[in-house]
Image (cartoon, rainbow, N blue to C red):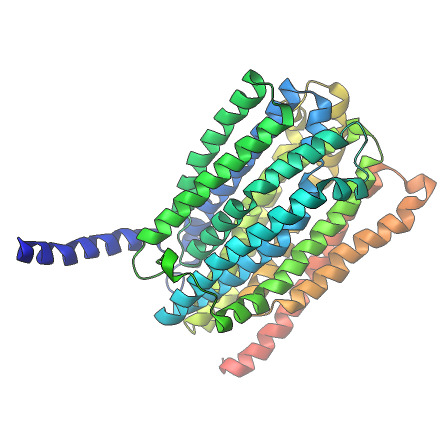
Length: 470
């Protein structure tokens, strides 16, 4: 029996390795377009599913709790992004480092990176929970949240941030799995937790009448489920990104490298979110109807954004793996392919969102005034949304090449700086103090920042070509 058991074990191990391999993508050889689509489509579906479940939160609240509750949930989005983007940027560092070591087949460094990143995700979540719960009211007051919305918004934010550790664990874990090309299993986990989220939304809001508290509780429960599933998966993975809870440790050299790449991405994300918070504060000054319409429209735009963002994530992982494997000649193909994909997806989906804007907004609210307020935003932003995707792809390429500080500064000046200058100067003038002039800052800043990132890429590419001798 013992001999039989010993003979069976290697076969089981090989079977596990084969199962693992089928989820991984070799990004360093073969067709870039085919493999990029194979990578991006599950990621796109994951992000769209996540937004569908978030939309379910807003739809349930808007339909069964009223416009104030809708505004309370929607007005939190910019603030939540501001607080979470700092730590989410660190997951970019974990992704780049993991992909590089995986491409270079440096197993010891890969293992240390995985365990450092996952422990860092836990610390990040605990910090966010503390900040969000303690500072909720003051932060929302600084954002000029309407008084009739403030109590509900504070309650929602405090409960929501109780799930931050689970959210960070899932996002760091999925970033690590993306680095080796596994974008399918995070999709499966998200689908399971999301269905539970929708069911709990209906139970807590429609049946138990818990209003925004019910939506927040449902979100926390679903985040815990997705975190559990991804940790369980990583613990069962062979070789590449296997996780052992007893081995969680902060390895200083890996931690420093994650910070080197991730911190600039964190600051960039925070800067974008900060400018969005300022814009949200300006939107809030137009009243609850505009806030509700803005929230619903932004939620619809989110579907277009995450579809494009899948190619931003692909650009990071493909570039990092090829640099790790010393396949420098494939970088240009990655740039052209990812830009082509993001232009097609952004242009198509952005204009579809405008075309079907009214019926889509009608899913969120029965108020005609709120629908019209949402159409103003969709009409200005969605038509040119491809510019945002093009900008993000160039950022992803630069990060994959190991340059993270440069895109941070370009974004600071090109996107955030221009928006803030507009708001604090021209927007204050009576003829330009309109919601339309506020929204137009988005496409203008995207185009300028994309152009600047493109110039930076050619400078970096020329510098690295000399170093690589190609």
